[in-house]
Amino acid sequence: MKYYSLNDNKNTASFSEAVIRGLAPDRGLYFPQSTPRLDESFLTEIANKSMVEIGVEVMRTFVGGTIPDARLEKIVTDTLCFDFPLIKINNNTATLELFHGPSMAFKDVGARFMARCIGYFNEQNCKKVTVLVATSGDTGGAVASGFLGIGGTEVIILYPKGKVSQIQELQLTTNGNNIKAVEVDGVFDDCQEMVKSAFIDDDLKVKLNLTSANSINVARWLPQSLYFFFAYQQFQHMRINKNLAISVPSGNFGNICAGVVAKKLGLPISHLIASTNINDTVPRYLQTQDYQPNPSKQTISNAMDVGNPSNFIRIQSLYRNDFNALKQEFSSYAYNDMETKLALGELHHKHNYIADPHGAVGYLGLQDFLAKNPDHYGVFLETAHPIKFRDIVEDTLGTTLKIPTQIQQILNKIPEKTSLSGYNAFKDYLLSQAV
Ligand SMILES: *Cc1c(COP(=O)(O)O)cnc(C)c1O
Image (cartoon, rainbow, N blue to C red; front, side):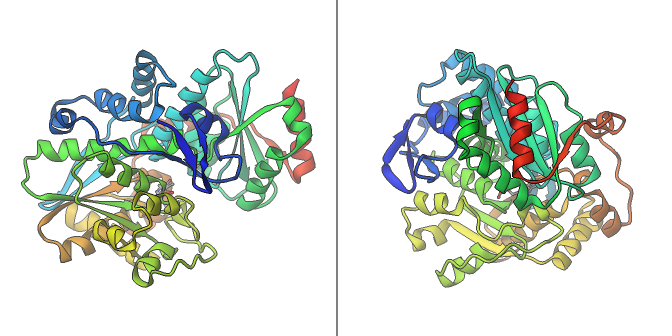
């Protein structure tokens, strides 16, 4: 399996090159050259396979010989160290909970897999890899816990001062070991600019081996396709004779794009639904066939506040840019904050389920699809634990949430961080890390 740049299909790389580089040298996203159908016997026997067996079989396709089988099995085992339960909501709907990992958001699987791949690829190299990541919240926590203790790596997380929740800040600043947190006087975009400047800074290139843990990296993006296999596997255990539709709360469209990949690999999902908040560039595109990105707007499902989703181009490629083919298997609907809060209430009062605002958006998209397609069974992905959006959930539902052990463990730890402002201060900080 080779990867090519979506800017120029002659620009190819192996899996390991694509992972280490992140973006192609021409700034394009890497994309697999093919998505070959998995072995038919594997597909018919998924119900009887373990999570690790599924993980190895699927990821073997993508690592394309750059990681030996025994090591891949270890990487997958370490990555999938928690559950992904399918919880029944009513007689035609269930939710797949993706938040049982260390940072309690679905980005844990991609971050853990990427960290272990980089750890492996860098084993023969005596120079450590410095991983830079800018975060507005969830990504940083997943990357921090994913890379914690991975030999040969050091992670530097930049976050905007005062703009992440208290729990999120503790997740970034209490890891120690090879994880460093930098609090930036500014907004998320300033953090992202500092990371971008560091990558093109020649002084840093000589001293440091820099890479990025951005969500466009193939090692963070592709393992997310496993969620769709886990959903299908548990759906099979329910012995319901209906077509399966899966709704994905979407922001940058990485997770749902991994769902399209799963479908191309042969997983029998009949329809995918990208549910968004008012950042509705893709829902509008599917109505008008005119792609018009907007600046992002703030919502209560803030991990999806993306005006120009970078992974949508990957979805279009998977459908060979055929708009009608895409529309047959893929829908997208948008909801505002008021609708999201009503859905949180409905899930709680009617179905005794406490969702987070992102999951609630996924539920809304699924309900709209099922109303028009009653011959389907629907699963929506629950992408974060409600505790991560504690204030909104507690205020909307008038309840108090229990604090899970992952969060309990960090509440009494002392945060460690470096505070700085401006690129020059960041550069000095990076150079001081190089010695
Ligand atoms: C990142 C995130 C999303 C959006 O995922 P994309 O792959 O960017 O579409 C949804 N929900 C939560 C909780 C997230 O952290």
